[in-house]
Each structure stands twice: as structure tokens, then as C-alpha cells.
Length: 149
Length: 114
Image (cartoon, rainbow over all chains, first blue to last red):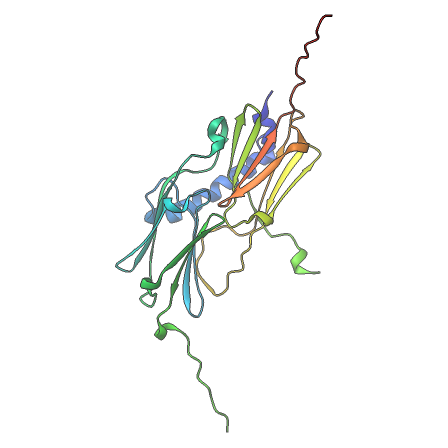
């Protein structure tokens, strides 16, 4: 029985092979652009956005345990690090094929001076680590009421 | 046309691991940002399709973006030996785990000789 070929039909046809190549190219492009700041085994995707009263940094780290993730702030640099371990109960079988990445990762972000790192809050849900930093009062946009006479 | 019913411009092919166990196969897919209720599994004509919709309701101004946009989607052709009626799935920390049991062969029956 050739499950490997049947369960992954994409690998059988030539056109799909091109898709796979495109996929790999895309991955390569992304990973090189991120390479300078990472030195771990894998480089989880990091997003950042702001709204009027906070900065939010999100890191895609699926399949982790909370206690294997570390979040630190030092000299205005936010660092997220951790290790994804292969310890699923399902590893008690033969792994046919794996594309998922394991091991250590480190991502760092320079915080704007207006981010209040003493009030940092982190939350891990559905494999996404979300870090929120409130903005200092002076950084919040102010609304000035204009009187029309 | 209603924009909410349009499919996403692109879909992400989630990274998968396939594990062969004694009693079947386990497929694990990384789908960060997808909750249990946003996963859809369908089996049609011996093809298992996994779709994970992610909620990207990020408000505010994006400063930096590396995550790929769109929903997760991946299809696997199933062999006849898989018991489609007993497929189960669960999600944990953004990882979807699907168990594909193989059909148990009938056990040899001992017939007592009277």
C-alpha cells in the first residue's frame, strides 16, 4: 500500500509540483527577510499593530505549552523565545512525513519609547501569542474640541 | 455580490505531519489563529478536506506583518482502508489533529467442534 502518494495527492501530478515549488519559494523569501533577527531553529511569523491606546505584537507559535514560551523586555527590546517540543501523544507511531518545524525560536522587536513595558500583558490562544503594551498618555491622540461661534 | 460570501483571495496550505499508527493515521496541521469552531472537515469522494477560517479582526494600524493572509485549506486523498465514518478531530493550541482509523479486519472466529 502506498499511502504516502495517495494521502498527498499534490505530489503526484506535475502541475502540483509547480505549486509546491512556488510554495517553497515563497517560504524562502519570507525566511530570508526575517533571517537577520532570528537565530533559532524556526522563525515564527510576527505581526505588530497599534491602536489609539496600545501596541499589540502577535507571534504564531502553534502547538506550544504556555510554560515553554518566554516573554521579556530589556532596554526597550521585547524578546519572545521558546521551544516547540515533539511530545504529542501521536508520536507513538511512525512519522511518514513532517513539514512542521520544531525546536527553539527567538524573535525580538524594538519597542517605541511610548510603549509602557511595565504594563505588558501576554496571552496565548489558538497557537497565537498576543502581547499588549499600553501607550503612554502623551502618545495617545488627543481630541480637541473646536468651538464654532 | 455580498463580499462576506466571497472566498478569500488566497489560501494557506498548513504544514502537516502524517503519523502511521497501528490503528490508523494521524494528520496534524499547524493552523495558528483558528479556534475549534472555525474548523471545517469534509469527506467527499474519498477526499478529506480541511478548512480553517481565521478571525483576523485586528483593529488599528498595522506596523509589521509576516503572517500569511487567508484561510487554511488542505486536501488529502483517503484510501479505501480508512473508516470514513469514524474519523475524529480535535484542536489544541492552533494545531488540528485528525485521526483516520483503518477498518478493522474481521477477527478469526473460533468454531467449537461438537
